[in-house]
Image (cartoon, rainbow, N blue to C red; front, side):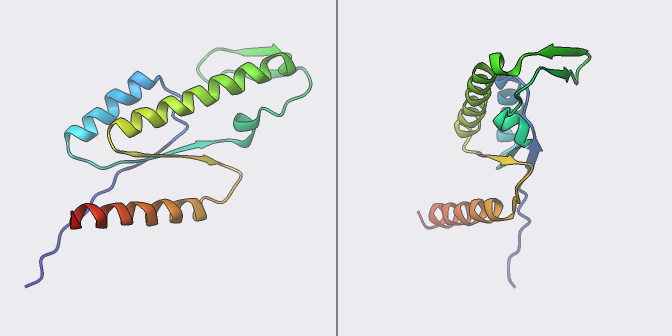
Length: 130
């Protein structure tokens, strides 16, 4: 008889706009359960590029209300903070051996997911042969 098994691979799809500590705690629980996890951080093109040129009113999603800002004054700092957050999330995921990929919601995710799955498959095959 052929042995079969069920392979579970939790996939987290989120903007991951949480504190790195909160993400770390959640991933630690999954690692404790011996789960392998893929994190897909999906961000809007405007979040990734901050292309705003004129005074813009931003609406907070967590009860912050509306805030009118000069985007040219904020762009550089915003992009630095975003890059740092993405890097921190990637480092946290890496601490547990989990993959982390950032997706632009305006682009097709198919090629990126295929590439990621091929890479993971190769890693799994290598670990089984070791």
